Length: 303
Image (cartoon, rainbow, N blue to C red; front, side, top):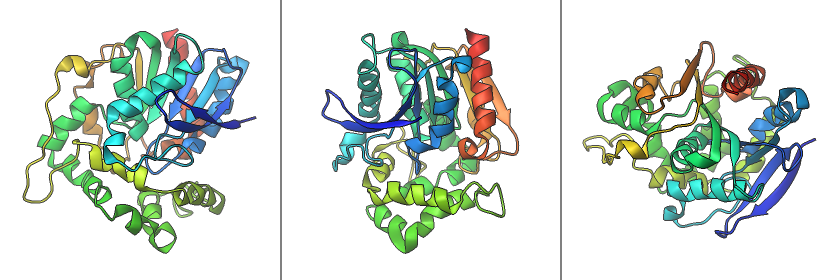
C-alpha cells in the first residue's frame, strides 16, 4: 500500500511524498519530471518494496513547485542546487547518514539526479537515469546540434511569463499535446486514460508556476531566433558521476534525441546504457514493467 505524507525539510521546503516499504530499509528515491508528478512511480514503488525485489524503502517526492509541495514564487528559488538540496535533506529525514542506495530519475528529476550524484557522491549507491540528458552532452548539443536545438525549442515557450496561463486554457489543451504528440492516447499506446487525466488535472490545478520556473531559471535552453545561446561552461569535475549508472533511453523521444548519449562515458566511467526502441519520453507510463525489470537487472549486476 502506498502511503502519502508531507515532509518538512530543514530548509523550509515541504515536499508531498508517496512511499512504500519499511522505514530504515535501504532507501530508493524516485524523481519525476515535467509535467508529471510523484504518482507516475506507483507501480515501481510497490515493485521494489517487495522482498524478492530488494525490499527497499521507496520514496517518491513531488518536486518543489509540483502538486502539494512548496511552490515559492521567486524564480531564483528553482535554481538546480536548491532542488538538489531538497533531495539531500529528504534522504537525511529517512536515515541518519542521508544515504540513498538507489536514485531513479526521469526528465527534470534526472537533471537533479545528475547533480545529486556529482555533489553527494559519498551518499549515493547507484544511479538510474531515464530519458534525462547529462548537462555536459546537453550543453554541447544545444550549442552545436541543430536537430536537438529544434527539438528543445519548446523550452523557450515554457519560460514565457504567460506560460502557465496558456497551459491552463481549455482544460489544459496544450498540456495534453505534450503526451499525445508521442502516442499517449487511444490511437497510440493508450495509457492516457480519463482516470490518468484526472490524476494530472488534480496536479496541474494546484499550480503550474513552479514547474514553469524550472524552465525560466535554467541556462540550458536553445537560443531564441536571432540570438546566441548563453550556456555557461562548467569544469569537468562539476559534471563527473562516480556511481554505477544505468541510463535507460527510449529511442522515440521527440524532445531528447539519442545523440545526447554520445560521449556520456567521458562523464560517467561506470556507465551502462540500455536503448529501448518503440518507446517514447513517457516510457514510465508506457512500459512500467520493462522499466522495473531493467532496473532490477542492473541492481543485481552491480551488487
